[in-house]
Length: 460
Image 1 (tube, one colour):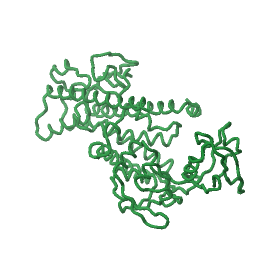
Image 2 (spheres, helix red, strand yellow; image 1 turned 60 degrees about the vertical axis):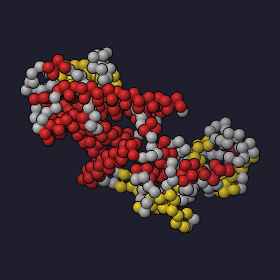
Image 3 (cartoon, helix red, strand yellow; image 1 turned 120 degrees about the vertical axis):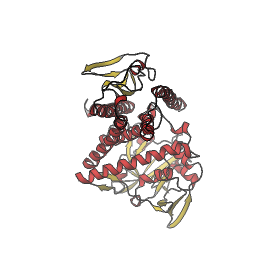
Image 4 (cartoon, helix red, strand yellow; image 1 turned 180 degrees about the horizontal axis):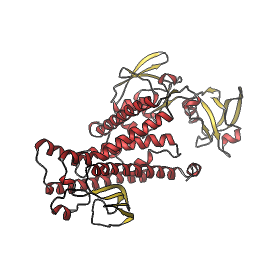
């Protein structure tokens, strides 16, 4: 499929395709991690599947494949249930719950016959590959594209605030200087610092004066749920990007490239000023003062009842501000890729922790399923952003699989660590029961998370 074909698709279709490609790639490579270490330690792998060939987690229900091919002693295939994938390793209690095999005496090629450290590597294989994949992607992105960001001090017009930021005490035009005394360097990190660091005070410059703005209760909740807007954005002049035909703006003669500087004689160089005035003159005459070809001119019309004139403004920050650009050589890109992966892993752990420790973040509002995953991808395909998001999802999968829940890699790791410390192997009966409980728990969480997504769709 050509890139121009992708660009012509609807936003939802592009999101779905990106999600499908990213998850399929990550699932295959995660399972390859288990497969690689199993083969390394001469352990037989009976199945290698993208998606499940049964109704997860019920291994005996609806058993069929969309595709399968046997090579050597391994069956490779694509299942019909598209939520994950698995490798069936001989002699291991896993999703397949093959009790008949486990009832037979251990064989040299089986998982249960291997040394504890070998079994540990087999179980950690998927997580290791997910982390390595994130590092490799980040290295590639930084070496090819470099890094570009808006320095906080370059946002020379200050910030534009939504209603929740305004309630907290921030004002349009504020220049954010520090958060809890730590100087702000990158604009895009301001909001994450407020949430992840559970900030108490934001230091701003307002009308030439330094002002401390306390982070009030409810602010983090508003940011996380996104119920009231985008919290803060760089404040930008109003430059027309497009005018919709048949609208009042089109009738008035507004054109692409016009800079709107006043409405009814009142200065409105920034959108927040324009927005506050237009709300008061619905159905009334309106005069826009614009700059066109370096000359001021007035355009007259009537403000529609819905207060929408019918033009789009330029939203690209690089049109108004000097972005910082960093280029990385091959060695520098490797270092940046490793440190960036470490930082992203740490940030996600902090996000996950907040679901259980923050008074303002409710699990029902922050937890999501496959639809939430899809929403993080942009409606227009961009290779750099796709790669960055794929790497981040790989980090999420690594972390989630590391959780000490039976049925996940982390659950098996806990049992193995117990064995390595005590010298006593957990019985297969206990493993079977724990795995059954873990799989039921995972199914419950999966239904709950995806149910929340569906509820939000109908609610919106």
